[in-house]
Amino acid sequence: MKTKLKKLLPLMLGSWFLFVATNLGVTVLTSNATAIRPMINTVAFALVLYVWSAFNVLRNRRHAVGLMEFVIIVYAFGFVSSLVTAVSNLGQATGLLSLVIVGSLVGIGVNLLWFKTCSQLSKVTVKSTH
Image (tube, rainbow, N blue to C red):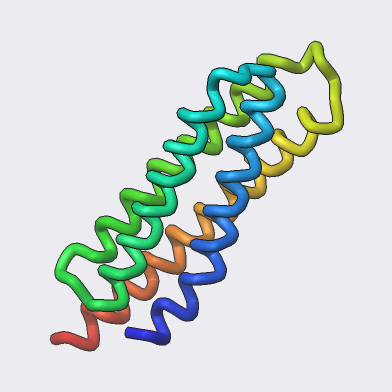
C-alpha cells in the first residue's frame, strides 16, 4: 500500500500546490481583498480532503480509491473555475492572468494523470485481493 501512495503523492502534492497557486492568482486578479479569508478556508479544506484521501489509501480503507477519485474530480472543477475566471478577465492582460491560465491547464492535466494512476492502482488492488 505504501508503494501506491509513493506513486500518488507527487501528483497529489502537485495538484494541491497548483490549486493553491491558481486560487491565490484568481483572488489577486479579481482584486477582492475581502476574499482572502474564504480563500484561506478553501485552501485549508482542500488540504484536509487531500490528506484524508491519502490517509485512507495508506490505511487501505474500503472506499479509499472512490474518495480519492471524488477529490480529484472536485478539484479538477476548481481548476476549471479558475480558468473561467481568468478567461473572463482577459481585458486585464497581465502576467498573472497568463500564469493562472497556464496553472489551471497544468492542474487539469495533473488531475487527469492522478485520476488515471489512481484508477490503475485500484485495478491492481482488486486483482490482487481475488
